[in-house]
Length: 118
Image (cartoon, rainbow, N blue to C red):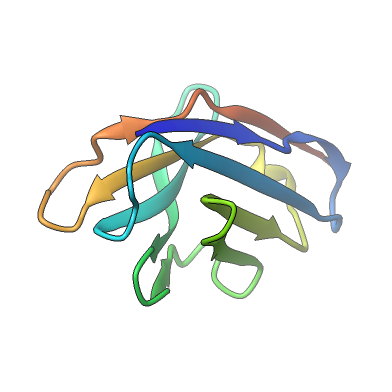
């Protein structure tokens, strides 16, 4: 699976951004698609995931109620709608794919920078 993330940028606190992750190379019906982020000097952390088949979602507590993960099956693309952004959301955001039978994420995109100014 090849993943291409896009949509990052600079936004003021309280603003919104939508990240996209275009997938290719494999049918995603047996995959979870996830978003992670890594801020400078910090470890990478989980943000959200969606099960491609069925669409069930799960969020970290830090973004619940502000971020929404979704997918467009026709476009093989996963989205992360980020609202009410805070300076602490500043990070490089990565999309990733994990087979439903796997414990680890096998495929990673290249990352897209999100910067939230106060």
